[in-house]
Image 1 (cartoon, each protein chain N blue to C red):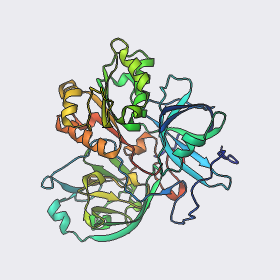
Image 2: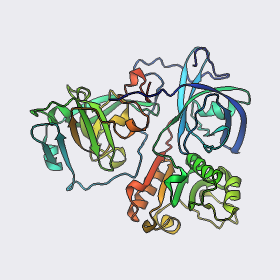
Image 3: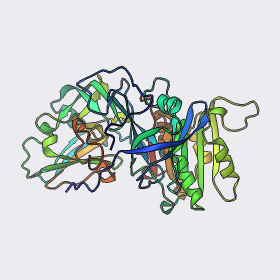
Image 4: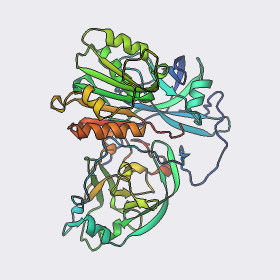
Length: 201
Length: 248
């Protein structure tokens, strides 16, 4: 439905024709906040990050150890399923490649788990080969709690709910386990360029 | 895995009525052929299409109860918005509006979810909570319910008369307003932003394990979420939804 439909009296903003803007998105200068519950505040001395599940030896880092891992600075466009996109966001964090380096695994999927109980699922190939990070610096400053600090997953090529806030670890699995929003009608894969917002898109 | 059971289809609704709620807010009453119902708290995506094919999409909360015959959206006009000024200033009775939904399965309440039900709203954040209030009233539920509602001024209280009428009924909803900018001279209610002290007075004690729904701008949602957890409420019993100044 919708073919040939026009909204009477709607002309829209001046066209940007921006090739960096996925379909149905608009450009946002601010950094809107979305979350399903209260912002968790885990003290850094209690924080750790682990990689568990389908691998020969589970991994775990304290905050101090995590900050010693080699980090990368990346600048990426981000796209939220609520329609806003933000260009050239600057992050610093540890590549997921670094976190699973040397692991012997038959896993094909990963579930990110977080303080507050949030989870999101991704194919392993969507978080490896330089496509995902665990970020703890945004725009040159420590990542604020409302934006997922002390650390969040950053998977900029997918809708931003996949970039789980307050992430505490990755569970490697041989099968796909739908996460929080993925179980509530949102798309399992979430590619903004194919406008995969909701189940069946 | 990842079986896609159904699609959320775009549908074309007809505008049956446009009702001013406050100087900045209007309710759109829609007839949507094929609409399959919703849960209180869910939203829809609205898509506008210009003559040259340009489209703009935004999300709006559903204000009507699942039991209501018509779908109602209440839209706050954002000054620099692209979609909300069209919906509140241009759209008129008889126009068509393209939308799809319902969307969102977490920030929802049904009578069987029980309570006590603690609703905390800022500005147009009251809209999805109103769907819960209307649902509760439509089915005659006696689940205890309180709405703590922060508005800038008395004139900007959305659904004020309907809330008054519901609160006047026996054994029902309690409504507590706070005004943050402008108060009528004889105002005797709260006159500040929602804080921990106010929540300690208004919310049930954590022992009574209320189910809280908080919706509004990010500073309000952050303050309320943090305060409720600080008062001892279980974080998993506090559900949040935010309306930022996101250009809507």
